Image (cartoon, rainbow over all chains, first blue to last red; front, side, top):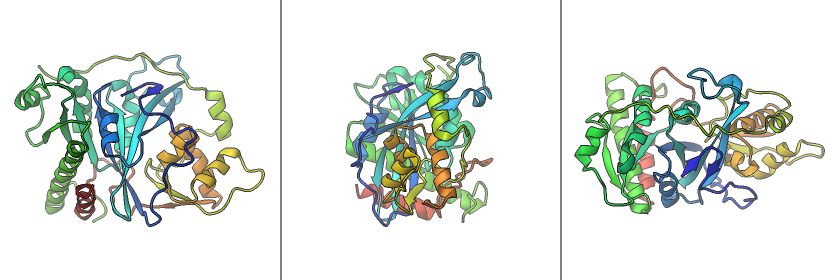
Length: 216
Length: 130
């Protein structure tokens, strides 16, 4: 769970013993887990992370607020948002960071920074509060960030997968997966589902020459 | 049922701008292209006497490679402030960064750039091994 200035994951604080990365590590990668309050983002991160999820924060000063709509922000000196992250050492050279990011519209300023250079995103959906995911999905589609949707089943789902796809107005090509964020295997499968999806997109893009990254 | 746009804008928090201003010496921008959240940073030297305490803490923490987001969490400082401190240390040659060679560009580009298929395949191997 997350909120402004408060997070389910403890701040690192005095964790001088945060396990170091492997000496051979060459590159940090990121995947963003996005969803509404209490949907299970930190739970999913915790399920697969090799470290206890940590919390950090980003601050935005007033000067930077106002590209969108400043109506609710006028008079505020700064805006702070806390977000959680975990870590997976994939091999000797690659380390993957998982970020649990609040999907609400008021956190828009976090998005560009988080998604730039990421592999892609997982939108975690609670079927009892489907509408919490709408903004995140709109934003990802608009930014053309590859993503999968994972239905987190903390309880019995109230929508079938087909109903959920309809409720989310989800493009037929976007994978919609079932998940129990408390389960390491299920959470791992969601990450694999995302990377598989991005691999297909990336391979196709290179084949046609369109949308190809700058580093071939 | 269709997607709409919520307009909830509440609970905007306040940070202590004075404290952050002091730590960063009043600067407000860091070179964002150099320090992504997952950029790996390594100290090139030990802290020296008289060094700003935040700089010294970063150097001690980065004896082995650490991601920018880990440094921010460890120092309990916002990411933006951490970036400015890291820029100082990079400019004075006290830290180096391991630049990603193969992932997507870190700068915002007009179209989202997918990571290279070979890199994604390595990621899949690593995830399946978990």
